[in-house]
Image (cartoon, rainbow, N blue to C red):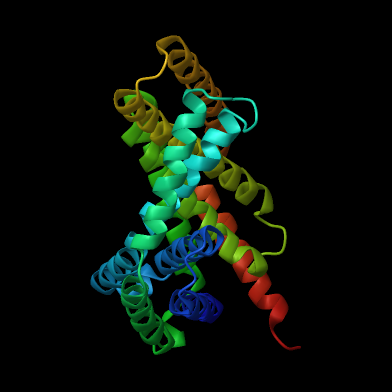
Length: 290
């Protein structure tokens, strides 16, 4: 299982180089945030090997490194979400046109506020984690650790789905999305070691995370629409129609998410752990010299 530690160190190194490049474009910021999320998922696979205290420290450092990037990402996503809901060229001089302009201005401002000093500070945090991961003794990493880590986050995702279904709140859905994304990232990192063993489970978890992510973005857009109506005015009937369209889109995404969630979490944590451990062991034996 030393391959997990190696992959983490390499991914952290790529994130450091991207942060130090100073590129603040939306695609680059999105790529860095995605990479850091993947690194945090890999770190969870190593939690038992690291120990809880060390894991919490390193996880917090990666979270702090990603935090300055969040406003840039959110602002860019809101523009894309509105374009999907209200395509350009069809709005004329309407509320959609007005809020689109405001969201684009905010996106530019967020990129300008993310200066090189903030990127350099994030790079320093990530570089420190990468250095400590390279120093971690390979012998401390086991297949059982990886399987137990997957089981742990799988159970967290199942509990989060239950809570989201009971609460029907934005925070509940957001927590469910985070846990499912952790699961998808962990499975993705293990796929090369397991051939096609868990491809179907990974695909389901990845699509589920996408559905919940799209719902979260629309929830943020809902708040921006309400905020902009107070500032800009806007025709009530037009704004209400836009909010109703957004609500229908969210309801459709949530129905799809719960259907996928039921399929994903019907497998059971113990069965998933056993499957991961078996696939990792089979792959390990296949790689042994004869």
